[in-house]
Each structure stands twice: as structure tokens, then as C-alpha cells.
Length: 485
Ligand code: GLU
Image 1 (cartoon, rainbow, N blue to C red):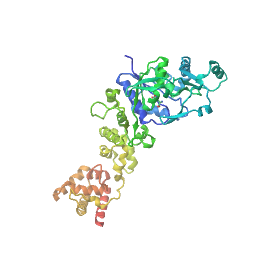
Image 2: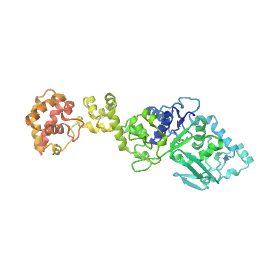
Image 3: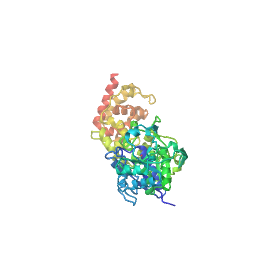
């Protein structure tokens, strides 16, 4: 059996879209599942779309997500160059384009802008394309030679007959047959000498021995034309896997506007790399069984591309949040602390024990950005309403809360030991004296020291963090508040 070789072939046009990350991940998993090679190829032939710094983003993202490539511009595996603009300089695309011309499968086209503008256009996949009328196919050999000799600008087009059909196979979609009349004579070599993506992907995938091609299904409609090129050369067509569209919650194509379309967006929103990779793996693919949490290594073991679905995958941020929370819970305490620290420091400027606070929030947040809302009350007591003291189940009313706070204040003023345990012991004695439930006492105290309905910890843990002075101050304030109403 031939060794599996897959490639991730991004165009350096900006941040790494979730769809691109999914293609890269699936390519990686297909290769690694079978001990194959995963290759990086930079497709930079569209000079107009090139974005400065985008190549660095690609390297950084692959590195961070653990999708280690075996070959690429920075790792020669004998199939280089791995950057299309550099491949172009070797003359490879022109050589193969000329071979197609000799076979009658391609031809020079010298039509100028004005002539092309007068031709029929059609909207394909939302893009307006010119239906070329094969005018230049009718040029005699002499006319072509003369044009070339006089350096008249040209492109090279694929010659697709108007009759017959073309069939190609996709692993998910099965056999797809199209009428040749529906296929345009697409440009293979542009007037600047660069190949189009349409041509370069075929030449490169073949010459780099790629066995499996995974990409978004926006390429599905062009694939018959690629297959015609493979056939014209007598090359073997790779296994094609066109992935379903990824949509946002409103079933619209996931786009920049949704705010979480790229890997970097998600990192900025406080998600963990591992959770993003895990979640993206499930955008269209599902393993046997109900399990959803997988490390990259486990994905490698489980991944089977035959289980990819054709139906659009909805990017569900709520689900990703849940998944991220699961990763946070399972994280080593020390690592969590290190990662949470910058977020804690952003909200907490006073001198708090951040390690303890980190431990409090670890199981209660879904992303790091949730930290602020959980811990902000430590920094400053928020404005709150006296109604917050009322708790039916604990039979707490404003009056009983006032009584409890008034009675525990002198006890807490006496107390020197403000450790969680010390405070708890003291308050428990008071509870026993009163013969009431814990909550009857703890609820009003917790409300007073936090000003919040929900906190990441109980009254005494909070007081331990706040310290004696601040805790007493807040309890006194609570008493005032309850007296005022
Ligand atoms: N350069 C193309 C893109 O970024 C790659 C498509 C493919 O994988 O063939 O969309």
C-alpha cells in the first residue's frame, strides 16, 4: 500500500478560519491515523489577496494546535519548494500547461479586457464569471506564434468540450456527473505568469504525491475540471473529501461577522487550544458512541473520514463553552493558576491570594473571560439591593438577616483568626447556640461580604480572602443597608 500523504494548503490571507483549521486537522488526522505524512504547502499565487504576516499566523497556529507538519517550507522532505510562488520560478506550471496545449487540452488566449467584458457572464457560487466563447481556440498555429513573438499578453485556458459529461468521485458525495457544457474554460496560467489555484492545486497535489485531499465544499463545483486535468495528464486522482459548510447559529455561513470565525478570535475569547481543536474535530465528524471529549492523540486513534457527515455543521458557541469548561475542570491546578493569573490580575488590583481565588473559580467558569464576573466583588463591594438577603428556603427575611448580622458582628470583631477554618468554627458555635440551620447564618453573611447572589465560594472562604478589616466593613455596611429599609 502506498503511504498516505496529505497536505494543508492555506492561502496566506489572514487569520486561520475555523473551516481552514478543520481541513488542516482532518488532513493531519487522516495521515497520522495511518502513519502517513502531513505536509504544509503555502498557496500564495493570488498576489492580490496576500496579507503581510499571514504566513506567520499559519505556522503559529499549526504549532499551537499540535498539527505538526512532516514537510513544508521549513522542513524539506524532497518535494519542495513548498511555496507556490517559489515553485512557479522553477517553471513547473508553465511546463505542464504547455504539455496540455500540445495535447489539445489547453490553449493560449489573447483576448483583451474589452473583448472579455463583452462576453456572457454567469454567477457561480456567488461569483460572477465570464463564460469564455473559445474564440482563441480558433486561432491558427501561425497566429498564436505571431502573438507570442510580439509579446502580446496571454493567459492559458483549459479546453473543455461542449459535449459530453465528466464524472468524478468524492468520498462523501459519491459519484458526481456534470455536463461539460456547464464547465467554463478556466484560466490555468494568468497573464502575470502565475498559475491559478485551479491549476496549481492539481499540479502540486500530483507532483507532491498527495493521496488524500480534504477541503471545503466550495471547491466541489470546480472538481470536475480538476479531474479532467488529471485525466489529460494520465495522473491518478487523489481521494477527494469535500467538507460540509460550517454555519453560525443562524444557519448562515460562518463569517467574520459572527465574531468567532477564526482560531485567534476564539483564543482571544478565552478558549483553550485543546478545547478548540476537540470541538472543531466534531464539526462534521462524529466517532462511534457518545463520547465527545478527545485529546489530539485520541482523535488520531479514532478518526475515520468515512464518518464525516455531508450536512452543514453548526458552530455552536454554547457547546464549545461547555466543552471548554470541561477542559478547565480537568486541568492541573498549577497550570490553571498560571493561565488564569493574567485574567485575575486584570480585575483584582489589590493584594489578594490569587492562587486561592483561582482554585475557587476553576470549576465554575467556561472560559477565562468568565473570571472577571466571578471575582470582581473581591476588589470592590458592588451596589446591591436589600432584597438580596431574602431567601425563602432558609426562612431568611430582611429582619432575620439584620438580626444575624447584628449578633455576629461583635463576635467577628473579637475574632483574630480570619482563616476559613477559624471563621467557620466560630460561626458554627453561634449556629449551635441559636439552634438554627447553617444557611440561616451563612447566607446573610455571604450576601453582606459579596453583595452577590452567586459567588464562587462560601462566606468564610470569602472572608479569608478579604481579610478582617474589609470583611467587618462590609458586614457593617450590610447592617446599615438593612436598617435603612
Ligand atoms: N489555498 C486554498 C484555500 O486556502 C486551498 C484549498 C485546498 O485545500 O485545495 O482555500
